[in-house]
Amino acid sequence: MKNADFRQPRLSVRARTLGPVLVVGATGAIGSEVVRALLERGADVRVFVRSPAKVAALPARVERVVGSLEDEAAVARAVRGARAAFYVSPHDAQDERLSETFVGACEREGVRLVFAGVHADGRTRAARALSRALYALLMPHYRGKFRLAERVRTCRADPVVLIPGNYYQNDDLCREQLLSGTYPLPLRGITRVDTRDVGDAAARALLDFSVPSGAYALTGPEALSGEQSAANWAAALGREVRHAPDIHVTDALLDAAYGGRKALDFQKSYRLLGRYAAKVTPRELRQTEFLLEREPRTHAQYARDTVAAWRREEREPVAL
Ligand SMILES: NC(=O)c1ccc[n+]([C@@H]2O[C@H](COP(=O)([O-])OP(=O)(O)OC[C@H]3O[C@@H](n4cnc5c(N)ncnc54)[C@H](OP(=O)(O)O)[C@@H]3O)[C@@H](O)[C@H]2O)c1
Image (cartoon, rainbow, N blue to C red; front, side, top):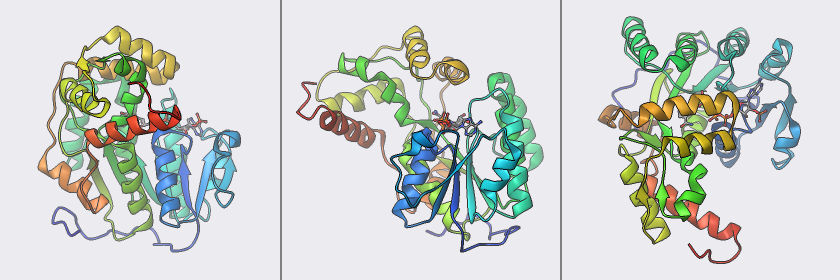
């Protein structure tokens, strides 16, 4: 798909056609989808994991490099010889230091870096600095994440920065509540996206060096409120689901699912998502469609697929 929004490629790294694509965070929400999308496209894949047991189900042809982002030598080993590299910034108090190690390794090795995470976008450095300052007021817990994304954006590794909206798959946490007829996450109305689409978009940027370096929003076709999300679940389940926003239920779900820093980050974010609304802009949708070369999945589709998966899991039609 051609798109006037995008400049010609600025290849500051060698467009390699050999070597595996390295994926960090392969056991996580986004990284696992990036691995799936790369394998579907026939790419050679190398994962960098702390625990190989967690990727035991991946095909044998996936190369495993075991190590932590805290270990510079292990990161250098993982990046060396890669054709391109995918990075997500974990919910970690040291997230800026960990990403610096990774970005530095990609710069030294001349490996294209594709990153997914929060980023304050803007056409110029000054515009982004202003936008970052505003976000820092609203989301002080992500101050470091906004800084590290700017470091990626301006690095010498031909970077592609993906800016996903709130994942549809965050709703997976609410299975029990949905089956009881309520949707508890507080959402005024925001951009949301399917993690499968994030994986597909990342795979394109990792494999196709004609994708220009820059930042790309990743979003579904429309902004979604809690009411609209609940309505999609109701349609998928074939029964009433009402939006019953409850920050205490949300906090408890996040603690039970993640705990620690990740739960804390999400709890702060959901307090904001319940208060502020944002629309999907035509530019954001164009950027998403450019990378996907198709329309993004809808939340209704995700809800239908998830209910079908629940039914398969139960091995018999679930009395939903
Ligand atoms: N959730 C959303 O709606 C949303 C929306 C937009 C952006 N984001 C951003 O997405 C990012 C998180 O991505 P995600 O959702 O894919 O995260 P995730 O599911 O929490 O996965 C994090 C991955 O990083 C790995 N990891 C953590 N620390 C590591 C270390 N020291 N060394 C090596 N690997 C390490 C984890 O491996 P282990 O299995 O070993 O722990 C895991 O594979 C965050 O920056 C967040 O702000 C999230």
